[in-house]
Amino acid sequence: METYAAFASLVAERRSCRSYDRDRAVDPDLIRAVIDAARLAPSACNRQPWHFVALDRRPEYAEAVEAVCAVYPRPWFATVPAFIVCCEDHREAWHRNDGKDHSDIDIAIATEHICLAAAALGLGTCWVCNFDPAPLAAALALPEGVEPAVIIPIGYPCATAEGGEHRPATKRKPLDTILTWGKF
Image (cartoon, rainbow, N blue to C red; front, side, top):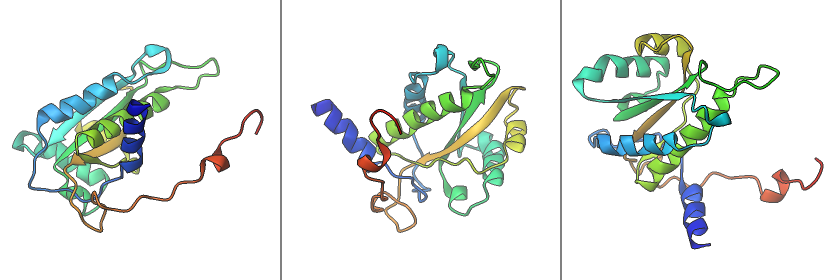
């Protein structure tokens, strides 16, 4: 029960962060750690249809970072110290009998593993899905069949009203309103 309490606390405290300490780089080993958490995520038939592109503000990644910022042009986004582009690999995905490609579900599970691992390490993240994947795929030279699904900005949160670590908890529906035993 103690382990569950720690996990429940982590889940309850995790927030979408939109304000990062732009002067504090994220150690590449921390980025590797959160992606390793994604590597361990479950996937349909254990196909693991994902790939992750990590970018930070080192000069050699400037062009790719510019491409990431161009597909989601928001002022706060341009100040993020690092990004993880979570890609679904349709070539590796399990497909249900009716043809449903499960890579979208699998990448969502893996992405949330990244967000929870980052929170456990004191890092902020935010799911960003409102972007055109085609120019980003081209900029990152992704092979055909590999699609950017989520961009995760990652860094140390600033305690600001714009979405830093001290932002109040968002309201969630009560459990009894979303749980039905038996039939709906």
